[in-house]
Image (cartoon, rainbow, N blue to C red; front, side):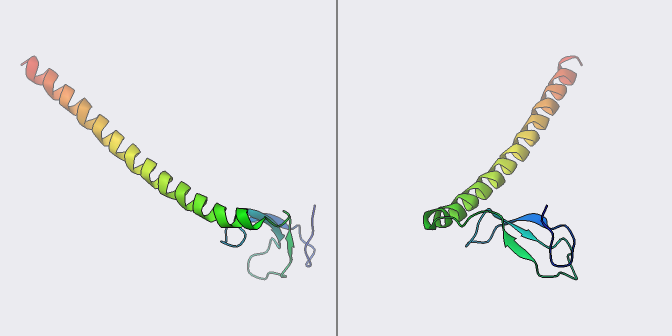
Length: 94
């Protein structure tokens, strides 16, 4: 357990900046009256990792957006298929 300058238990957070993507650090648990405590949890990353990870995160986010779009379209198409079959059944039996 890590305690900050004000005596509270520090919180483990993750940095998503371009210079330290995915690197974890301890900080004060208080949000507004923050004591300014900061301590890196992970060792520094190599230069190559810092250059590659932001691009990978961007690619992942774009793929996630595309997946969400396709899933929404898939649900819509399934609904149209069900409606068309129901209409076909109603028309066939009348």
